[in-house]
Structures are given as C-alpha cells and as structure tokens.
Amino acid sequence: MPLKLIYRGKRQERTVTRMGKQPLLTIEDLQVVITRKDKAVPVVQQLSLQIGQGEIFGLVGESGCGKTLTCLSILNLLPAGIVRTGGLIQLAGVSLNDLTAAQWRQLRGNRIALIMQNPMSAFDAIRTIGDHFIETLLAHGKTDRRAAKATAIEYLARVGLPEPGLLLRQYPFELSGGMLQRVIIAITLAQQPDLIIADEPTTALDAASQVQILDLLAAVRREFGTSMLLISHDLGVIARLADSVAVMYGGRIVEQAAVAELFAQPLHPYTQSLLNARNSIGLPRSQRLSFIAANEGGCSTGGCGFSGRCPRVSPACRASLPGKVTANAGGHWVRCLDISAAQMGVG
Ligand SMILES: Nc1ncnc2c1ncn2[C@@H]1O[C@H](COP(=O)(O)OP(=O)(O)OP(=O)(O)O)[C@@H](O)[C@H]1O
Image (cartoon, rainbow, N blue to C red; front, top):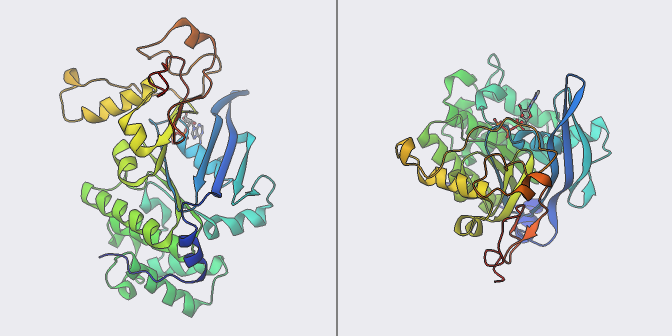
C-alpha cells in the first residue's frame, strides 16, 4: 500500500528546501578508537562527509570497516571502551560536540532517529506494539496518551500496515520481521526526525520484505523529505536508494561520489573489487572476477589500508597514506596513489 502523506508545517518547509545547499549533517575528521589490552586501536579515522537536506547518503563497506561505529558516534551512543577522540559533528550548522546528556536525549528520536538491522531486538517481547509506540511518543514529550494512540494508528496506516488498531494490541512475536521493521519506521516517522540513520535496515529480512522496506524508505524520503544515512554492505541496496555514496575500507572513506558516477567509474581498486564481486554473484567462485576477504578491523597507521590486497600496489602505497584526489566533477574523490590523469577526467 503506498504512503498517503499530507504535508504540514515543518514537513512542508523541509520538502521545499530538499537537496538545498545547506548540509543537514556535517562530519569532519571523525576519529574513533577502541581500547584493547591498554592499547588504543583506531577504528575510524579522518572520516568526513556531508548530507544535504532530503539527501540519501549511502555508506558501504564490508563487515568490520567501521560503519556502525560511525553511526553510533553521530548519536553519542558508542559502547563502553570505544571513544570518539576527535572530529566535529554538526546538525544544521550547530555543533553536537558539547551537548549535555539531557540535550542528547532530546535530540535522539526527535532530530536524529536510528533504524537498526534486527527489528526484533528493538522490542521488549512482553510489551505490545501499542505500549512501545505510545510510550516512545510520550517520552519525547509529543502529546497525551489518547492523542499518542491516534498518532500511532495514523502512522501505522501510513506505512501500509493493515488494521493498525488491532496491531497496537499485538505482541512483537506475532508479527513478521518485515512488519516489525515497518512498525519501527512508523514510530520513527511519528517523531518527525530531520535525519534517519538506517543501519543495514533490510539485512535481517527475507527477500520480499527487503524490497518492500527499501520501497518504503524511498517513499518516506519522497513524501517527507527526510534526509537519510543509509548503511549497507550491499551495493545493490545503495544503488536502489542513495543519491551519494562513500566507500569505507579499514575505518576510512576511500572513495566518494554520486551513486551513478561511482557505478559508472569506480576508481579505487577496492571499490572496483566490490563492484566486480557484486556482478559475479551467482557464478561459481572460480569464475568470479574477484573475491574480497574479510577485513580484520582497525585502521592502518602506515600506508594505504588496502595495500595488502591491492592488485595495483606499489612501494609508495605501503610507505604513506594516500591523500584525497579529486576526480571528475560532482564531488567524486578517491584516496589512491594509482589514479591516472585520464581516470580523473583531465587527461
Ligand atoms: N563493542 C565492541 N567492542 C569491541 N570492538 C568492537 C565493538 N564494536 C565494534 N568493534 C570493532 O570495531 C570495528 C568496526 O566495527 P563496526 O561494527 O563499526 O563495523 P561495521 O562496518 O558496522 O561491520 P558490520 O557490518 O559487521 O556491523 C571492528 O573491528 C569491530 O570488531
């Protein structure tokens, strides 16, 4: 069932400013470290990105490259033993660096909402969908219980869930994974956040539910103008939804571009391997164009983190970290020493 949305107030203004010049989220030089056996191991380094109003920004990379810790840094929700040691994070031009605990509580959900990978883990098994929905709205100071129930019914219907009144009385185990993810999206939308962070929102779902949830997120952006940071290890998901994409490897962004540009002209050898691996899904392993081994995690502190696996490696790659090279127009850049002038569109 399609979203039937009526623009009101704040929402209407947001749609008008969609894809405008002022970035909604700015991250500059984010650094995150894990303490392991009294040693600080960097796991996210030099990470900078901007997400525009109404933009869907994809962050892609294999397991352990630092995608989730980047999201949790934005929400100040890093687990114990993992700390942000540097970087600036701004929402609509306002720094989030020095917020109090109360300000963070206010910001989460109301301004920035998180949709996680496994919808079941977001629910308490002994509480109904209605308990979750209504208490979330009340906790964010939106309204009284009666009005919260009416809002819950309205938003459950908007995300295409049938019989929302009945649904409020059901328990999480009575719903499929796809339905629970819809409930989470409904709860998220009811709080009218400026930014949704969707961390692998379809990974735990069956194939049919995956497509439905991706279509729903596309409709949310179209109808509400909400900006999104979409995390995925799957380039197919990014291609379907995102406007721009950053490719992460070993805790760093190694390439960034508009989605169409990245797919048409991937420059970093790691991005090329990711695309080749995707194109060869379904073929026997021996016939695949390439196969990428799992990343051990942690950032390289010497040369390029991909140098150990790179087919185009040179001694210089192991000696120093490649800087950002701007390629073509439209904000496409890459961290690689082996980029020719022709590839950069200047030769
Ligand atoms: N709670 C934790 N304690 C210790 N190390 C952690 C913790 N969470 C993440 N890490 C480590 O930090 C690095 C980055 O992890 P992160 O979860 O951000 O990766 P990811 O790209 O999101 O991977 P995945 O797709 O598997 O979730 C990895 O080496 C991971 O092992």
